[in-house]
Length: 73
Image 1 (cartoon, rainbow, N blue to C red):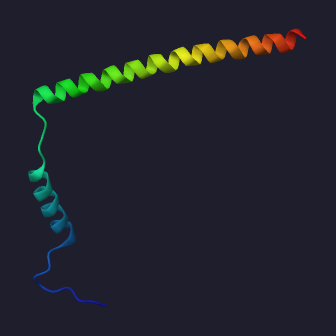
Image 2 (spheres, rainbow, N blue to C red):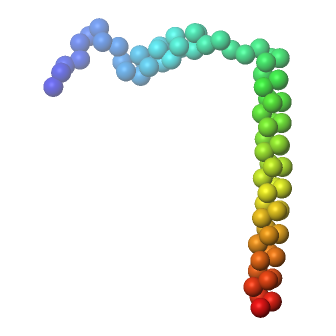
């Protein structure tokens, strides 16, 4: 076992100190950048949702027609 020396910092204290140091290095986006990127994310999300909705509608109609054909036999 290793013994803790007096000059060794507390692990929790060291973690917060290192975290604060790293956060000082971060280049934070401006308000305009945040707004623009938020609009892009919302736009892509809506576009992808519409894309999935169209394919879901298409495939559900195809499956429904296939089932009707099989039951009609």
